[in-house]
Length: 326
Image (tube, rainbow, N blue to C red; front, side, top):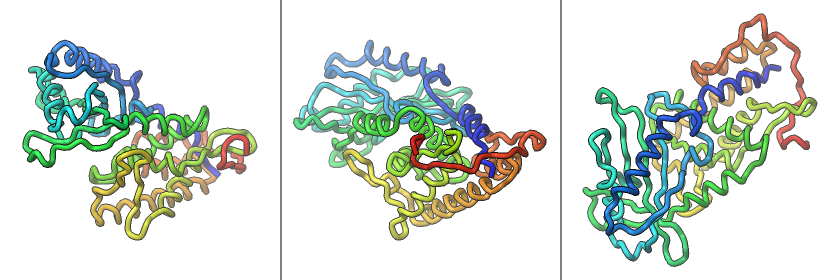
């Protein structure tokens, strides 16, 4: 059996994206927050900021298209009732951040700041605007300039609560494996899915619900191949008729795959089945070199393939899927 654990960990080191791995994006973030503080209208209410999305969850991956992003939440100290049109707050943010060296766009869920080099985008930062209602539930400002007033709305969205839930779901080595598995699935998605309707948060919440840590029962070493395979099996087993439905565990409780067309959903399922089969085939290989050749076809060129002469070794067959103590 070939588990290719060393290669999975090397792969993770190559694809992971976090604060320490992208100093330019981190510096841009700090500059944006300073500009916002210094230039926002005095008519705007006070606010605090927090990191959300993959940076807050430590599940970011390097972008294949070279255009990484970061998500920031801006929590304004006001009630949604104070700003019936949430676009007002988003314009405060947009006006403060507009500069000649970047483009600022008000999108429905956020304000996006994009940085360009030679006319091509290099990275972008999304700033989501929130306030809290009388029940202390955070509400997201949705709407653009071109939207009619009826479509400029406040929508329940508990980004901080979601971050806390996911970050506290697993501990220590289990948490580390969880993040490796999520990052591997994201890179697989980028390699294999030819559209943008399989969102990263959908894969992350799928793992939040169905990931089970896997270790060698003899030596206690992690087995990422088995953990990924078992998660994919769970996703396929939870297909609801023609679709996979994965709901946010916090408000707005939306189906994270709802934007996928039926054709895209069929393709998604087929690609997951191919991934499962490849993982099973790789596990059955006696040679890690051959196993990694199979895995590379799924995860892309960043997945390492060791020299054949170094990989024909006896491996332990004992695997536990319920954590180190099992």
